[in-house]
Amino acid sequence: MIPGMRGMNPRKMQQMMKQMGIDVEEVDDVEEVIIRTSNKDIVFNDVQVTIMNVKGAKTYQIVGTPEERQRELEMPEADVQLVVEQSGASESEARKALKETEGDLAEAILKLNK
Image 1 (tube, one colour):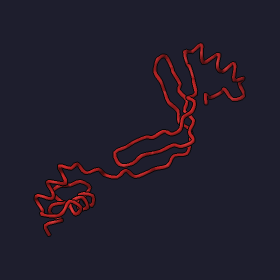
Image 2 (image 1 turned 90 degrees about the horizontal axis):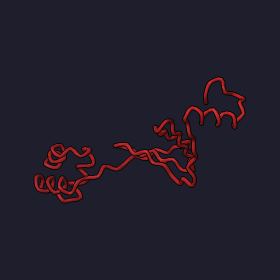
Image 3 (image 1 turned 90 degrees about the vertical axis):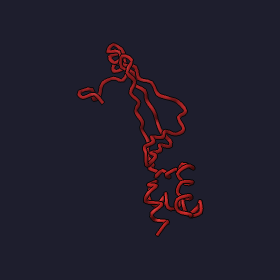
Image 4 (image 1 turned 120 degrees about the horizontal axis):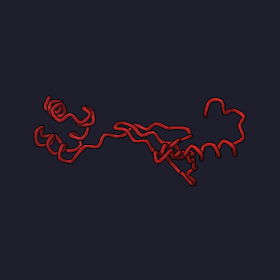
């Protein structure tokens, strides 16, 4: 909200924003918004999305309740095969060791060779 604009007529506010080159539009029928980081997803369901366009620069506003989900580390097949070859372990043991070591190949091999 813009300071000092409390109680202002919404129509007047839109007119002023248009004069300043600010265009605001609501995105209809949004089902879900996902913000993906390297180790988690932040998921918004039942969300409202508004786009504010100020002289060509777009800003997206997301309003809703976020739910954080941890992302599972995906192991490249080449890494799994390397751990299998170097340690003599099975594929499932190699995958488990890679998950436990967060993808560290050397640590996974050492762990399986103990």
